[in-house]
Image 1 (cartoon, rainbow, N blue to C red):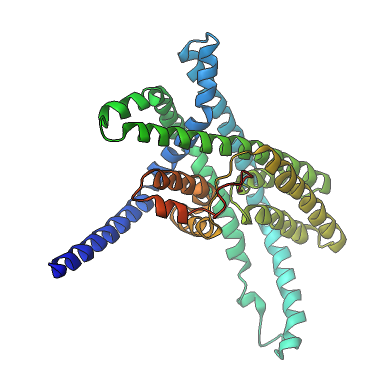
Image 2 (cartoon, rainbow, N blue to C red):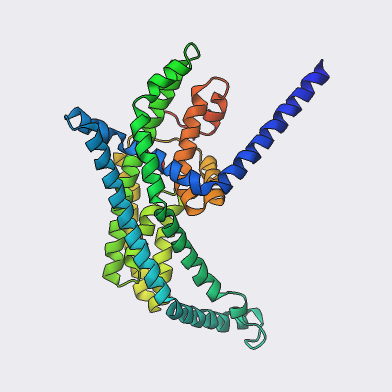
Length: 354
């Protein structure tokens, strides 16, 4: 009897592992379809109150839906224009930056080689650090942003159908799961919407503020691609912990290559750091009243996993996805321990995690 029980456990674990691998393969190979769907899902959570508010004020639902779609289309179009202009400018100036990087790498080699006992003629850092590969990676990342934005029609189409069917979802759940904890499922849905909507609203507002502030600062310093870097700063601040660091390092490194002036570079670093700390560590925590309460380990693992699956977009979506999973796991007795383990161990606090 015990032997049968052991085999059943092994079979259950094996089936679970196979299912996880299969889901991973599907998520990776169908990311072109799934990413717009996930984006539309979060946008529907974010903009559903707008449709309901307009409807409560007597505006026909069709007009409310058109208004929301127009707002999203305008935002995507604006992002696309900025990214496309930045990509074109980056392509035009790639030779200039490649030459500047080559000079920096050569100077770096001349400085380091005597320290490590290497002669400049026998060991060239240009062979180790590929400038062409660096510029190629930068161009590919911008091109990836353009590809995602070019899928905006699918995002808007998914968003339309989600907003159309959103109001009837609670009643469908009650009918489909009658007598099977249907109210628990409705409660989970409501909690999910509340937490994710609050997080997205506040995070998006402050990310816009961060992006605009970075753009203005970079313009004042004369940094190339200021608008594109501001857009990247907006997107990176969805990534917890490392997002603000990356959005500071990228323009500083670019400015270093562009000018080679240590004083100006240090001043830019100080200004960007101060601005981002005021927005991210002073203003944002006071406004965001709901904490996602995710463990730092879960945040790190989610960043790595979704970044590996879907690239930068996956990293941006990783925290809302982890928060959704945590709320679902906590709602059911059998999986509640897993949901608690995903938390930060401080369920009583209400300051935000970002």
